[in-house]
Length: 189
Ligand code: SF4
Ligand code: SF4
Image (tube, rainbow, N blue to C red):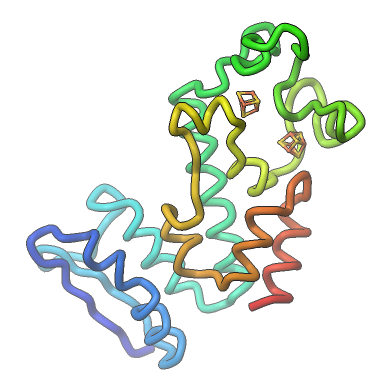
């Protein structure tokens, strides 16, 4: 397979990330493998994880496998941030938002909702049994006020690899498992 070699100059990874869509189109249309080089060597996760993941995703030529990689990578990234930063700060299964609202206080955070008829069917023993990217991208009012949100436009793997309709699917397929979202993404590329 022919290669497209992109060189990082002056450690300017951001500049190359901004060109992702162009690079992706060239590699897909001309069936090329992407190599991103910095200081004469292929970049590693340690150099820049975002760009490394972009390169990896572009080099997965099967669309379904590419989307699956992106889905898992973005879910893992958000999970890791929530775990590290303890944004929801659960105590005895009650999150910080509902601890601050005694009148509507309940366990299990936004996985429980009176409007939706109670506890989400995907929650068992206080743990979600599916991997819903839309739920992971969601931030409640409390978190948004603290500037904790994950926007599609700020995540290159979502911003550059999906069209508008697919982004809508990623954002609004609440409570749906990966298999459902993958099916919808494949239907709409
Ligand atoms: S997103 Fe908000 S409401 Fe949902 S669990 Fe976290 S703190 Fe609670
Ligand atoms: S699907 Fe969403 S609302 Fe339901 S348990 Fe999982 S994270 Fe909570």
